[in-house]
Image (tube, rainbow, N blue to C red; front, side, top):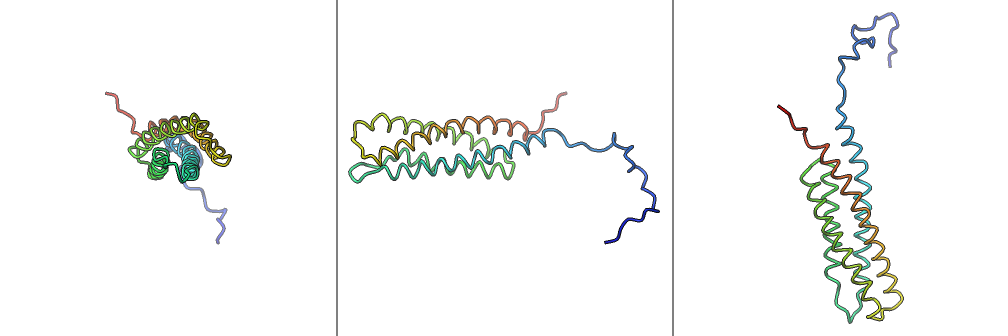
Length: 170
């Protein structure tokens, strides 16, 4: 590579005196970038919680019991909503992020309901030690998922507000 020649004069306008005319990045674009970097780990954590909940729902089923279809369906739909959220985050699609927020909130309410119901009926069923431990893991995952969901709602709401174009006042 050639080095710059020190004898060549600096072009006009690049000596730093033109700082007031330079373009500045709008603060909402930096907020969008920060929001995306905060939302991605939350979506990944939610997907992990849904996978753990799905595996616990399958593993706690015994041969004489019927499957907990509500827990299985909510975990599966929650995983799909996490994929929608990741897609909306990558492509900056406000509608997908809103769909992700709504779907994951409904799924989290259903997951907490299923976990509480299974904890309340655990004494009635005389579950084995392994099944009781798996149901406890599912209960803890549902509670942790509720906390992560609250954080995801806050971050997604802020991200959607910054992604939406500002309204022009007359």
